Image 1 (tube, one colour):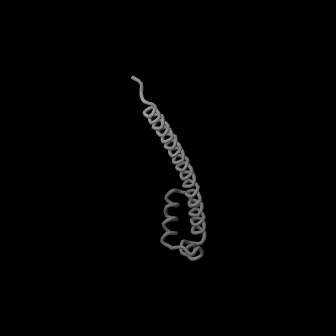
Image 2 (cartoon, one colour):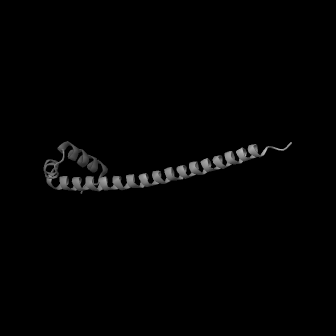
Image 3 (cartoon, one colour):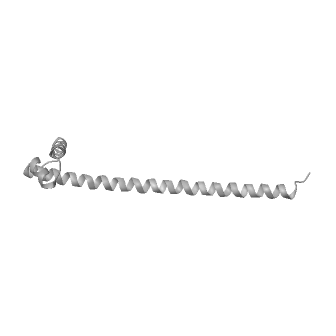
Length: 94
């Protein structure tokens, strides 16, 4: 028994739509993966920049005191002391 042409056309249309959906899902997954890679790279760059700023704050505080460094940099003295203490604990202060 042969299928009617309308049924075959409907099956072809459904198969085509299903394939298009599959390709769209694949493109979405690829775009999400690329975005995750870019965000991770930018997060690493931000962390490195923050570490450089912290290092500069610690270097200044080690030279002139945490209070003066905080005043000069318009930062909270508690935060400068925390950075200096953490740096001293890591052995990275001069």
